[in-house]
Length: 550
Image (tube, rainbow, N blue to C red):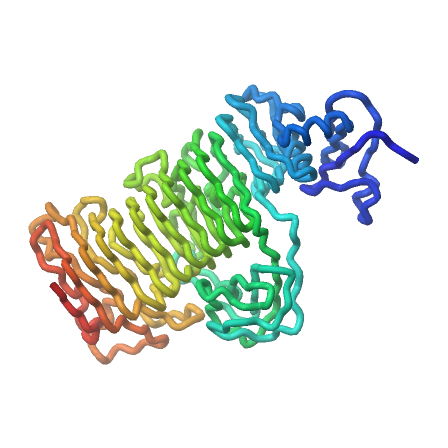
């Protein structure tokens, strides 16, 4: 049988054509109707899109498609998600640019439907109204920037070593390697959100010969591997730009049921530029959010000239059975390498603690803030190398654990400490801390006990790894704006009191903490005129060599 009409079916995020050897092929309906386009829902919830050859030729000649070409109304009332998803599916098939209609407002209701972005997309000056008040699946992204390439298992790699320069594999090109040992638990969290830890994992980039990019090295010894896969990296850049997004916030019960109605980035070499995200409708209760921009399982992603919004903080009962504030994010990065946030800001006051810190991350390498004004930088389950440059951070400041170099320069930090090493993951940084040409405003100018490096470590909890303080700390040209902190203020301390019980040699740590060896201070000044002290617990840091240079 011959057909004169080219037909496409968008099924579960994938375009399936007639004759493909899979169980979705019989869902393809091929017709020869005249007209521009026909888009319909099947009984199973899938979309069927029919496009005549005439319009295929038209769109290919133009090099782009618009949402209105596939029936989007853009009136702010009609649910346009089907038309949006179909537009991207068609564009993905033909390698076309997707361009939103200027000035349109696309309403996106709560039905489960994800638009896959695999080509350059210009959201233009259009607005997108995402209604989270009634959703079918809170875990379904609205957009996913994805790759056509699929991961595959690597055979015969049974162990890995920290800083290993090469793996024994021949690959089709540069690949993102993800490795897991489910028999070892790390990041065994302590405190109100305590848990049993995460399986030992790592993610790194190799070239086609298996050579590891040592700018993001292997972090752990894997004595056993339960899973290892390679995802070919898209080397051609993909750009997503523009767009004014507004989330109508959910009003669900305040518990750890994260909403992920977002833009998920699951492809390497992506630039997101000029996007704006705002939030409306937050009330007395609500479930937290897992990042409106959610970056994961990818490398070389830049978020540039973006305006984000912090989410209102809600409380629940944590794993320890006590009330706890829930982390809720507009930016989230998990298992991601070489991620940069450039010239990003947020709509709400970075010093307003009504709103949670804007960023969360886990298992990342080479995170960068440059020219950002945001409420927080955060690394939960470890970051290898982090840079904060030319930026201002608000009330939640810098929170991190990890390894490598943590560099803060030409920045203003308004948190309770200059750098907080997260106590819930062992206050561990295995590497070096450099602070250069910065201003520290303790607690945004409110009266506080000002510590440059804060954290807490009792030595009684097993986090699944040895915990370290930065081996070397260099602080150069730091101004501490601590004027007006009251008559009882003794001046800033280099280190917080990490363990109030460790005051003499009789204290025993089951899991010893590796203390900083050396601190270099150059031109550290205070507006209060009070000198920088070592710590309220000088015994704990008695062996730290502090070098004061002119």
